[in-house]
Image 1 (tube, rainbow, N blue to C red):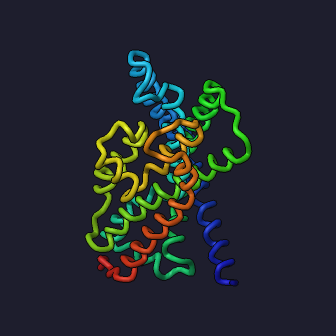
Image 2: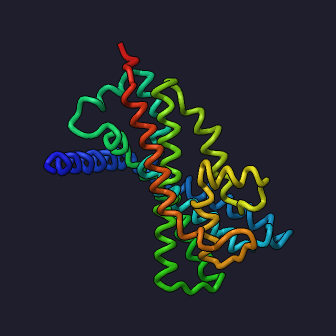
Length: 269
């Protein structure tokens, strides 16, 4: 018990140090936040431009589509705070500097999480919260407590699903010493694709995002439940499963990471 308390104290101490280090360059800090926010705002404008002409996309109006998009960005913003730097794990393994995580009095996995608390994600959080709020008003939604619980559960589950995939991709570096390129091949396209309704993609791709990499539970199924969008072949109640799917998927990815850690051999001199 004392070791867990000591580890937690070290974790928060390192997170605090990471935040202070990023705040040293305040101009870059502010521009990083604004840059992320403007980037996602540009995507929202693109959606509006497309739907201005076609009105709906597979039955989704602009405000419903914006809600779907913002829901994924919101959990991604939280994910970036804790897990985004996992994509660079291969650099530590390649340089041999990963060894330091093995000799300090904190679990290597949690030590690596605490390595950087990416406050630049606040730009994504700002955009997504504003977009959700505007969508909520424009769609005339009036959620009861149960739906708000589903909403926050979705953010939690979406964070674990996206974070889990980052952890899984990084784990490959234990075997190959290189993994960051896979982020751009797998993670980035997948995250971009779920900004739109899953139903517009081929059936095989839909099943991939449901059963293999469960990004459908990041925003699509929860949005259908929260917006009460009826689908003849899909139960709305799949939308409440996001936190449970997130926990299972993250645990599986964590186990792969730990398996890689157990067979790790230093590449340093």
